[in-house]
Amino acid sequence: MRVALFATCVNDAVYPSTAIATVRLLERLGVKADFPTAQTCCGQPQFNTGYRRETEPLVHRMGRAFEGYDYVVTPSGSCVAMVRDNYPRIAAKGIDPRLTRVSDSLVPRMYELTEFLVDVLGVTDVGAYFPHKVTYHPSCHGLRMLGLGERPTQLLNAVKGLELIELPGAEECCGFGGTFAVKNSDVSTAMGADKVDNSLSTGADVLCGADNSCLMHIGGILRRQDAPLRALHLAEILASTEEEPWS
Image (cartoon, rainbow, N blue to C red; front, side, top):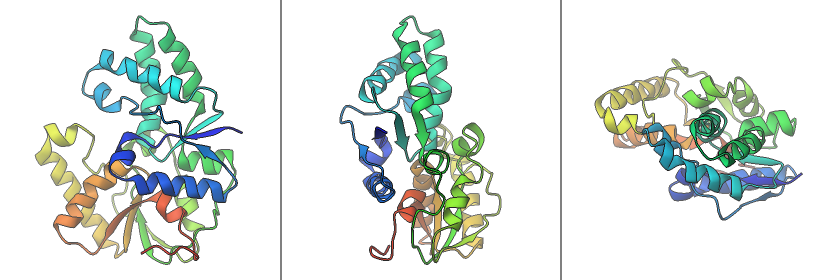
């Protein structure tokens, strides 16, 4: 089984610890993940802003970077949704027939991390240890487009020492939405504030999620409020062990 890690541009630039945690977690489960250095961005920011043609070269790059791998795993539901949902749309409207070949090849091989763990590896107990109170925010892409369902919470419930607390209004958007947060900053901030209020009401130590884009938005509000709650990616919790305690 040949597996590649798609780190994503956000994790590579801002949250490299999430990509490192993903590799450590997979290796602990006996999976060696390669890191193709040709990878860059999946094209989501460009496509969502209306630049479909400008996204096409990134689709081609993704196809070349991950050619020959059985599975492409990424700790980002939004990027998986971009490939699965929008690459076929881009190919259908493009004039280059190679776009269809890239889309048809890459779409079935692209997996969000919790999907890969539960559906492909067939595990929910990954041997993690994280003695903290945690609440989980399901991002819009993971919840609505990928249908991750209970996979993330199954994994969290199996973590030794972890107490999972239900998040009120969990299915409500945090307000990030990529360029939505830039173009509609007041609405975005208000939505994020509601998510923060609900998160703080749980009394949890950590708010976790499977998309660092959402966690960046929520975490920024938490830091500005000097709130006693930390935003942390799910992969970093699952990678934590008694031998290497989280701090």
